[in-house]
Amino acid sequence: GEQKALLIGLVLAHAELAGERRDGAVPILLLDEIAAHLDVDRRAALFAELGRLGAQCWMTGTDRQQFSALEGSALFLSVEDGRITPS
Image 1 (cartoon, one colour):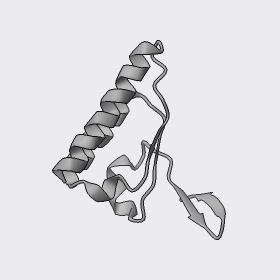
Image 2 (image 1 turned 180 degrees about the vertical axis):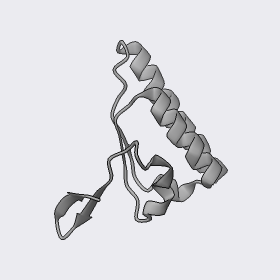
Image 3 (image 1 turned 180 degrees about the horizontal axis):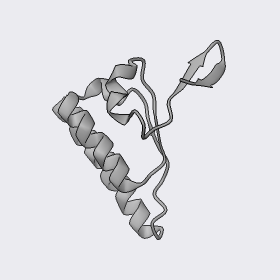
C-alpha cells in the first residue's frame, strides 16, 4: 500500500509539473485498477487530487463500489462484449 501510494504521488506530481510547463495543459492520465491498490482514505485523497489537477483521467476497475465517491461527478462506462455503454 505504501509503495503504491508513493508511486501514485510521483505520477501526480509529474502531471502537475507537466501542466505548469505547458501553460496549464495537464496530460491525460490513464490509471489502470488504481482504486484496488488504495484504502478508502487514500482513494478519497486521490480523487480530490485528480479534481484539483483538472486533468482528464481514465480509471479502470472491476469493482464499481471503489469509485462510489465519484458518483455524480464522473462519467461511468461499462465494457461488455466489445461494447462501451454508459452505466
